[in-house]
Length: 433
Image (cartoon, rainbow, N blue to C red):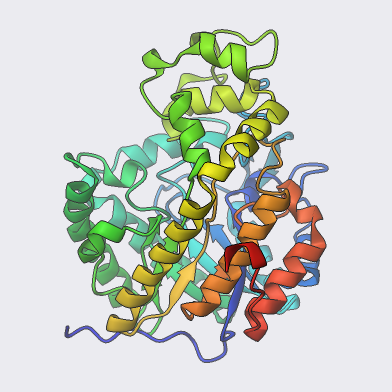
């Protein structure tokens, strides 16, 4: 291999304790929302032991779309749609000067001694929260073969913007996009997952070349859903960080399959779901939609999944998960360890650090508490130990450990995991060792 990876910046911490702020840091800035005050959000993060936030930087909107973002209107998806779905439960409309808000995030990070991982969810759901479809239309107007490159150009422009304002020292590294194989970035690719991942590689290689040419000396990468264990050869060799989101699913995957949450909406068995897990008065799936059809296009989350999260009885769903968990317990722990071993092997061979910017079990309805409960907390501790074991540069407590999720209130768990990771002290949860 001829490529020499760009090393992490010398002034960035040896271990990144990451909290996932995704697109919520700009979508949820209205009255009473968790990011109404960025200083308060950073102070709370530091209190819990974090030193890094990972964000959707809305790069194409800011530096590629040509749209006026000086008064960007954002808000809910319409009525009660998405209001019981994690990440989607935006309650208040808001108006921001998007570039100024980006600068304020970085200034707040600097005030609190934190760092930022730049990423993008634009080809997954960011634009669905806009007041009109222009952002979504601008993204989809780009020919699929060039979408990753467009992201790279916009991110390079964003880094220039931060440099101009003397805030680029807060950058840990840049991801061309989040979960590159799971969204509109991979449009037009056919075949099974292995074939699509392999076909995606040239698009990503071109994007990385664009960014490296524009920003030499700054580490860049692409981010993968899960660890692509059977297709690691599809990962470009020109990444500087191996960034993966290891959601193991296990029992949650069984729940999703049992009720058809990610399959063809026409095949969704509402009668079965209604008997087992839905709240009384649930409408038909076909009648549950956002206020405008374009919002459905702007998000990759399936209609049955949003419907069941919105209309499911969260306690009934938690009971289902607890009832079936024993059959999956060892398999979930084994999957996590195997995936992290594979990531470690690939990264070690190529001399790049590993970062887990999302992951562990998966996401349940907003009011569910499976991952916030004793099983989920124990899995967070296991994942902290395993992240240390494979020498990860950065990891999370859990994707749900962020200001817009209930786990944020479990200060003790987050402090415990973050202190263990940052100091290199393994927790060794007894049931998993």
